Length: 96
Image (cartoon, rainbow, N blue to C red; front, side, top):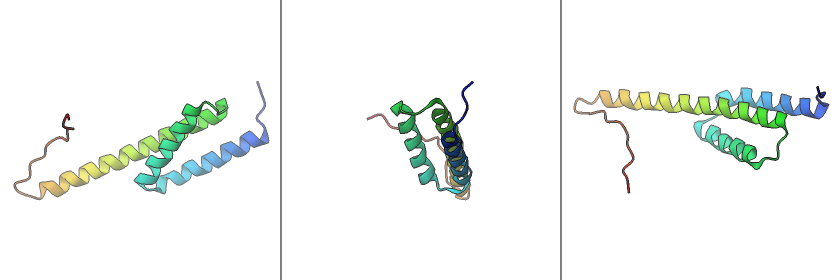
């Protein structure tokens, strides 16, 4: 089994530190970071370890953005429920 070099370990530690910071970033920043992760993964220029680290980061960012969207949706529903005549309809995209 190949030994991890100090450069690989440094890379891994930097990614772990960045992942921990993601808990407090805005939705827009998380979405932008997620797009960058996808671009790096699709480039095919990452080592296996780097790709796995990016994939893990992408999963965490995805969960964070999904949670933020769910909270926003719930907030909108609460706001609309305070209006007596408000009707909740699921959002659908109109076909063009």
